[in-house]
Length: 185
Image (cartoon, rainbow, N blue to C red; front, side, top):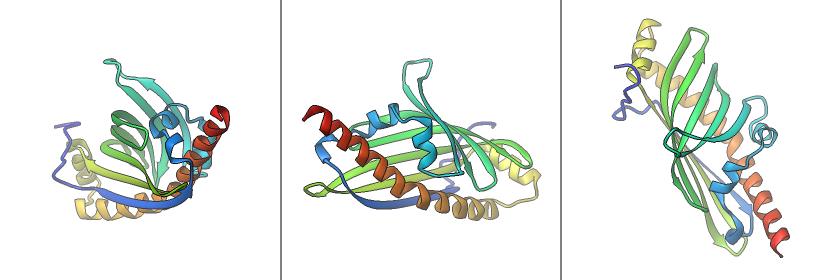
């Protein structure tokens, strides 16, 4: 019970892409995440993104801490780096959510990928998948909400949020990579 993740259920899933010009060989998503300033994070989803930081877990695993609004919930993401490569990162968070009805948890998997299309033309893909925890399922049941209703609301909110942040993340990564190119040129 509690924080056990129900990976057989999908609460929400969004895959959004954005094309951007960036020096592909200088793109390093893992390093960008580890050095992402709070104010740049806020610019990537104005009003929704509240704060970002970098730390390590007890076992030394790198972590990105993100605080954001998704719909009516204040979500505290504690992303553990599962894969941390220059062109692909996969991070997994057991996230705390403060809703108008109280606290609950979900698992969120965030994948960031940059592909080279041609020269400096690149495609950034932002994938966010959320699974409920047992705690979440009990929480919504106590509120008289079905899983289908909760999933529909979360899908709408998460989809809207990802459509806002994806092109801004792509541009932020591109600017970061271009600045790295200028420094090493």
